[in-house]
Amino acid sequence: MSEDKVVVGPLTICEKERTVSAGGKSVKLHPKEMLLLALLAGTPEVAVEKTDLYMALCTRERGGRKKPAPKIIDVWICTMRKKLEDGLGRGFGGHIVTEFSVGYMLCAKAKPVDVFPKRPKNHGPEGITCRMAVLASG
Image 1 (cartoon, rainbow, N blue to C red):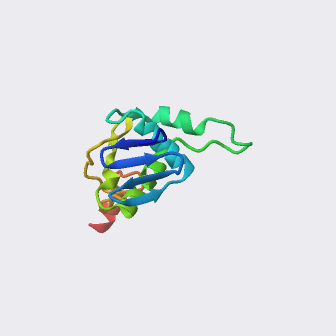
Image 2 (image 1 turned 90 degrees about the vertical axis):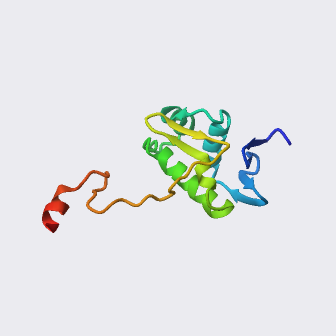
């Protein structure tokens, strides 16, 4: 195994080629996604705080452009999970685990994950029960 490859469970991560592979299949990641995955792979099975991920990925000079909102980490995680599910097969997105109120970690054993969770009816954009919808319907 060369130095630019990291193995976590069934996943082989190649930073140089920006790919993640498993079972003979491979997925190409965006440069920021690869940096994020490499940060998680640096300490497998240990949660990395979202603020640390944001500081590592989003605080350098951006040529006059505004820094992205901290929520961008969640967006990149969601996109990576979706790419792993689509490219490597069902269940591979579960290797990126959310540690609520902490951040994310890369695990050797996949956890069940709903890549695009569906909001229950009567929930507003923040996931808070929308009382107006309940009152209007009943």
